[in-house]
Length: 375
Image 1 (tube, rainbow, N blue to C red):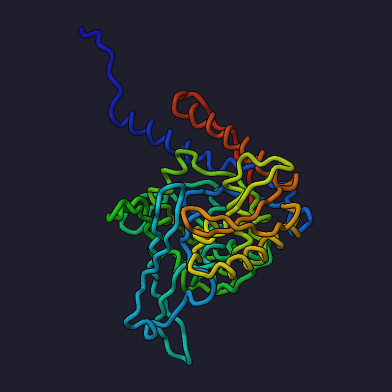
Image 2: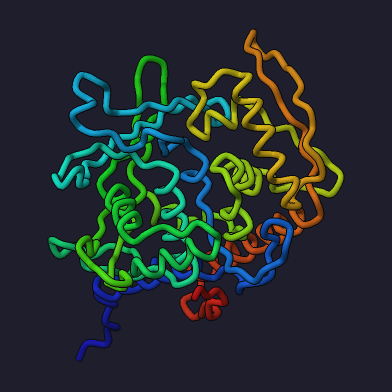
């Protein structure tokens, strides 16, 4: 009689790997419970969300007017927008390809090209808010492929927009989701004369109820790309106060606040940090503007943030020449509220990294229940 111990099957190991993967993704939904956040100078109870810096701080959107153009008006024109920007010493190119949508014009359906713009950015952030509080699950998409994503309704999207004072009609939300689904973004790194693609789209696929009526409660789903799933598994994200940032009146003020929340991780009361105009506008996607316009828009955005209570004052810009290139910078001084949110995000990230290591190394480790909630 054989005394050999039976080896675990390959299915066992696959299940173990899938379990670890799911728990790593579950960490994404361990944001802090909704607490009082500073919103336009007043404290209101609002949920937290997560920001993936490698996608939130790159120029993936066509800013301002002109993000939707009739197909007939683009004949002979370049459709793919290329935004060049830098991260450290790396030169990058963000290529944005539009979706094709239909709108009724004088009773007739007309095709338009639509690039992801300011409205799509805001709705995308709400999708990440839902994922950060509800968690990700496997969703079977057309073709029978299982991918990680979220279920949601148009009603949920509209409710969250309403809470930050940016209510949109259901048809506008529906159209923005179609643009998010069908537009294409590619990030490439310039290496000498070559361009090397390093990331792709944010979302993989979506099932949208595009013909729903009433309150738009029809169930929709959207799944995340492999790149986003990898970033979440590696805990490459930071918690941030959703309403505090996204309630600001202008896209640039929201962007600068988000930019500093992600990058100023050692913020200390009374200690300033320089923000450079060209760096901000390169990441924002409007680096083609003249310097006087950039400085004017930056100052207006900073005035909004100071009035909202996040920084102590609006400084005057200072000129700096680097390698024969002229730039301007502002020295920002954070308020205690800004520093408190940075400290909270640092503490959360440290805790998540400890738990992620336990998930990988300790099969008996059980994650705590999520604290976040949205309603």
